[in-house]
Length: 512
Image (cartoon, rainbow, N blue to C red; front, side, top):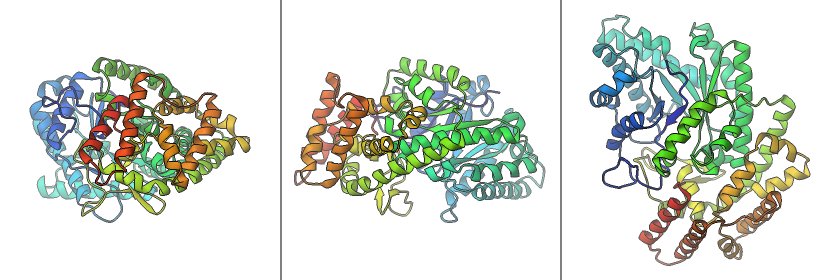
């Protein structure tokens, strides 16, 4: 069995350009396109796993039937659930709107029926990622709920026959942890949950267990640096705990292409493999797959598959964990006030940022939103796109002020030890800085005065000024100047602004 998967394709809509397989040349990927996408990725790229999102977007519930019908030859060579993997990202368990979780449960059971009917070797879908996990209790309740639904399904449709034993013995509910407080205290989630699994006789020694660490939303909520430090602490503690309990843990990290969302892209493989050493599965989002030449993407994926399993977790002693948490609080405190002050800019620009998938909106009946402090914000991709589109990369916001305070506290060597990619991340993001826009905005708004301080401190940290390095960076700067000034017009030329946002995104090879 190909386990654990190393490269996991996701449906995150961060691509600026059209996928190579879209005949119409459109960068928008509809729900109807996603079955074809799944088959194409498993057929043409070294992808091990595809995450099917039941939480934040509309979903094709016939995924299993269509996959077996349309890709029979592929699945004979690479059996689903054995060589390639389909994993459900189920809705968050919050006691509220649960209709989507119920549908995901029944889908897994129906696919198990289908697999047995056609003689497939193993149940097709055996793992669920539970978003917004903050406690072991959530995981235990979801697992128990699935077992109860499976029992009802067995009694109603199979006269009580033990048809789903293979699925029930293999099914896993994996925590998807999305906030830095939970990452810094991840043992409070993992230890009680993992002990329950061991007590229930789940065979974790053979397959190990996984933990999924988000990267985008922690950055949106707490800033880039705090998110990275929390992940380092969580990776170390997860490894330590699994060793104590006698099995392997295989961490997953949910990363995008731009530094704010993880820097996982074909150009920075060595950088992120060192930064996230110990991660066994990387999310390969749409920008990684579609905004770079296909051959370059293939080579990068092969490198990840070769190298990621060799990279050990960087152990964080308790003394250093305390320092990481202290630094995270410093960066977060600077971040929150700035983002609240920028809320109107971010939400306005996000309205002009095109969608790339049929995701749920952040308002309305099926609302799905994120926030910082008292403000509501767009989801991470449009948040990132909005700030890049006016030449203010979010990587820079609060980071300079945080660096100044960290240096004053004597913690800079600790920061450099656990965030070795910080300089590369800042240099990469800094190529898309538009200083003129910051200067103009600072004449009217105090928050841009604070961002100017960030830029000055980062310049000093790097020993070189941030700014465009190559002609394409200059073109990006010019586009963000145009966007900045177009947004002052009344009325705003929406079509022109959207066009310029996309043109800038193509240059930086990611929408957001």
